[in-house]
Length: 84
Image 1 (cartoon, rainbow, N blue to C red):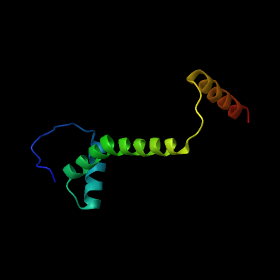
Image 2: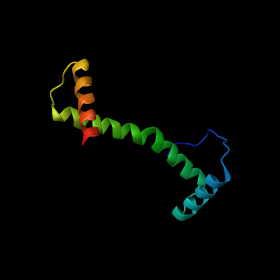
Image 3: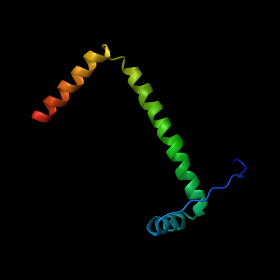
Image 4: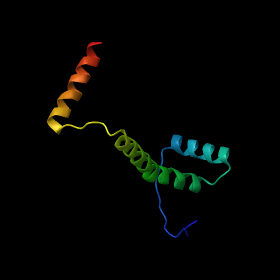
């Protein structure tokens, strides 16, 4: 684990603070650790999921048109879905 040298102060509404306390107690960890995990998940978890999704899309090797044509196809599909 990296050395923890930086400090952050933030203000939370009482309801969120209570949820934070309860979740930290439920997991048996410090609230600070829970906040660090949430920040890391927010910053890195979503990014990693997007990268995996992009890689999976590339593996499909689906045909790709120029953007104006693809936009038209997407809009038509949405209109068709709205009608059904």
